[in-house]
Image 1 (spheres, helix red, strand yellow):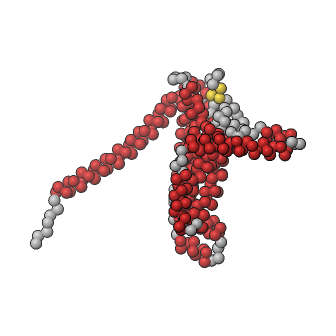
Image 2 (image 1 turned 135 degrees about the vertical axis):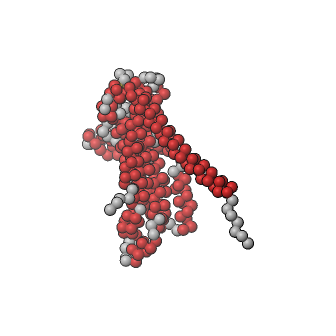
Image 3 (image 1 turned 45 degrees about the vertical axis):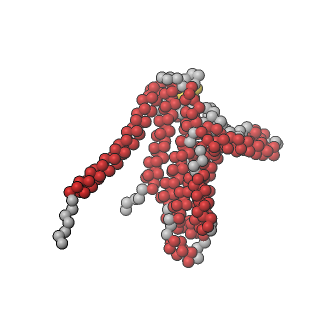
Length: 314
């Protein structure tokens, strides 16, 4: 029996399908780049009047005066960075402990449902976190500091400091952001720690190591680069969070070095004042400049994450 020769029709269909798939992939990449470029161009053109008026001092000035049309991003940059870093300082250790508990200590029958629950917490809308922070966390913090201040009545400096602490502050915003990014970082850490080869952990256990020594010397070093990437993803969400922070930070555009005073972030300022900015006004240009500033900060964070997690040669 003679061998059947491949039909030209199938070859043609395969070639067309391959070219079509390549075209779709290329088109998707081009569309994403065009959208990103359009956003950058829009922000750059819209913010140009503010940069021409205030120059590089826009980034360092701590004056935001809508009445006299004097705008500086220093207060918002400070609030954005401090709240995000405070959130990471609180969330990363808790996420590490929760992830290790889920991967190593929890029974197998409970590991999957609880892990799924933790992942679902990351999908809660940010406005829900903001409402919880405003109606629950802020009053609790205010009552706590007020109660503590009663113990320092004889120390005027400490008493005056504690009595001036508001429930809505940069510190409160950092706490809310920590709660928000905790499920995200925990879910990623669970996947990373779960990928550690069992043979490595069992070998170290066989040498007499404790659980803490195993996670410190084996699990974390093995997944260190991926964990850095997870932390940076959490930082990226914290930097751009709007509604939750708007509820609890106080939205004050005056400078204060204390994290227990009211403040403002880039995102919360844009959300609060964008409706009041008239088309073509200097205030609108300043708000768009804030948006470009946040874009630059976020891009820098992602670039740093990429540099930290990329494998090193040599």
